[in-house]
Each structure stands twice: as C-alpha cells, then as structure tokens.
Amino acid sequence: MRIFQYILLSLLIIFVVWRGIIPAFTHLDTDFPNYYTASRLLLDGKDISRIYDSAWFLQQTNQFGMEFGRFSPFPPITIFVMTPFAWASPLLALQMWTALNIILFVAAIRLLMKITQKDWLWCSLFMLSSGVALVNNFRFGQFYVILTLLVMLIYYGWKKRWPYLAGIALGVGAAVKYFPAVYLIMLAVEKKWKTVIAGLITIVILVGAGVWLLGIEAHRQFVMNVLYHHIDGNIQGQSLFSATFESWNNLLRRLFIYNAAENPSPMVNLPAAYDVFKWVITLAVASLIVFAYRRARNVWGDDALQVQFALISIAALLLVPATATYHFLLLALPVALLLTIRSPWSIEQKFVLLFYIAIAFMPYMLFRRFDGEGVLTILAVPRLWCVTALFVTTLRISVKRV
Image 1 (cartoon, helix red, strand yellow):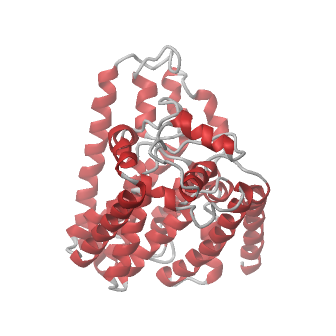
Image 2 (cartoon, rainbow, N blue to C red):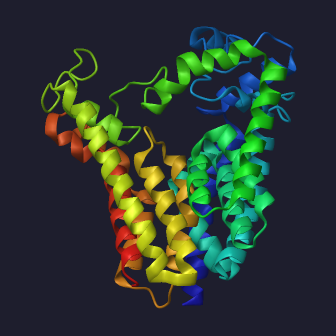
C-alpha cells in the first residue's frame, strides 16, 4: 500500500510539474499579465485611474511585451499582489512568483498536516490531487494557492483559539478575492466577535491603504462599473453565456436568454425564468445550509466545526457567479475535513472523494461541444453538477452521523 502511495505521489508531482510549473517557468499565459501590468504601472508611477478601462489597460500590457491583459474584475487592492516582483521582466517576475507559490504550497501541506493530524504523505497526495486546479494556478500565475493557505489559517486559528490570526487571514483574503468573507457570517453566528472584528478591521485597513495610495477614482470605477456586474457573473471582456465559467448564472443564461450573436439557441427564450430560477436556487441552498448547520451541531458534537466549515465552503463555491478551474483549490480544506471526521470512510465520504477527484481531473473539453445546444447545455457544465453533488453529500453528512 505504501509503495502504491509513493508511485501515485510521483505521478502527481510529474503531472503538476509538467503541466503547471514548467510552463510557468518558460512562457507567459493568461491571467498573470493582469496582475503584473497593474503592479508595474504602480511601480512606474503611472496614472492608474483607468485600470478598469480594458482597451487602455491592454495597451499598457502590450507595452510590457505581453499580448493580453484585463484588470477587471479585480478589486483595486489587487494591484499590490505582484508589486514585490513587478520590477523584473514579465517572465522573470512569473518565475519568482511561481517559486513563491511552490514554497507556500508546501506550507499549505504542512498546515493541513496540523489540521487533519495526517502524515505528510497523505496530505501531499491529497493536495496534489486537486489536479487541474493546482496546475492552472501555477501555469496562469494565479493567487489561489495563497488564498487556500489563508482559508486554512482561518480554520486553524479558529480551532486553536487564536482569533486574531484567523481574523487577519480572513481580512487579507476577503480584501483581495472576496471568498473568505463568507466565513464572517459563520463566525458571527458562533459569536466569535474577536475574529469578526479583526477581520473587518483588516479589510478596512487594506481598503483604506488602497484608497490612500491609489486614489479615489479607481475605487469609484470599481464600485460603479465592476463590482455589481461581477456579482452577477458578468466579467468584462468575457462572454456572459460561455460554459467555461461554470455556474448557475451561466447555465441559466444559456437556457433562458436569447442573444443573436452569443446564444441563438436557448432552451426557451424566457428571460424572466433566469431571475426566478437564480433566486429559487439561492434561497433553496441558503435554507438547506441553515437547516444542516443547526443539525450538525446536534449530530456531530465536538466535531461539528469540521462539518459546518466544509458545508459553508462548498455551498459558497456552488453559488459563486462564475468559476474557473483554479477556484477549486479552495475545496482542499473542506473536503479534507469531511474525510477526517471518521475512519474507516463511510459511503458518503467515498463519494466526497470521488467528486473531488472528478472536479480535479475531468476532461472538460469533452463536454464543451454541448455548450449552446439548447437543453443539451446542461451537459456542458459537469463541474457545476459535481459541486452540486458534493454539496448534497455534505448535507447528508451534516444531518446524519455517517
């Protein structure tokens, strides 16, 4: 068994290095130019009030020798993410950023060992099994290894009763990528006010520093022209209808909203159904969360936090308005928590692992041919269905001790 684990570990390392790390060290891909250009403009003392003007931003990106770039939908504070590296050429900056991500990925494995009380081999296999999510984080120069580490610090600080560590990690993550803000609700329900206050203060400090250093105009543009559209899944420069960003918003648009250029073959042209189904799904998920969250406290006792944290995390990923492959690195902690609540694994835990692996390695291109084909569009979003199934399985675990 141990030999098999080492063989699997070797294969996963080869896969991540071959598909993710080597490309990041040899050429520029999408996403990274967005971070780099914004930080480089800041370091060069340029006027960054127009960072949300996509045509202007692309011109700046081209001047740095990169072919594509768009700052939307990032909040202004994201400008600071790449600042320590943006003094270098784009490729060298990506290489340094990738090296940092490798170090922080190892740190995430180490922290997962502390959280789960599993050995290094189990935790390494599990983290590497995030597959395409991890590969694309490295390849595209994304932020999600760091965000996953921050989410782990939120949970670890909460579990260890280090409220300020949890709050600072939450504030940093929420200020840059929104997602950790969902834990503010959970923390408030549990009356962890020190962590809530520390998180809010951290957000205020970071946003305030952004306004001070970057000016009002960029923040005004973000609030007026970017934030609402992003919440609705409308990412500037990307199709509203493409199944690439698998979410309920995208699927419902494909099914119910006609567009001559981008969606000529919806299942039925009924725009009102988009709003109705979107709210029905959101309210249904919210109601199930409330029920299962309360039930988990009675069913799991001292282990309830593991299940509740996983429930909130998975539900948030189910409801986000648009997803990319690297977003699902955020499944690492919640799935690990579900897999370590008992041993040997129950049938529900085995399904949790199955859905995690499916999301990580499913060949999505096989399903893209159904995109925009009327009712068959439902087959173009397999990741969405896997996350939905993972959420339903987590509900089952929450309400009945497996």
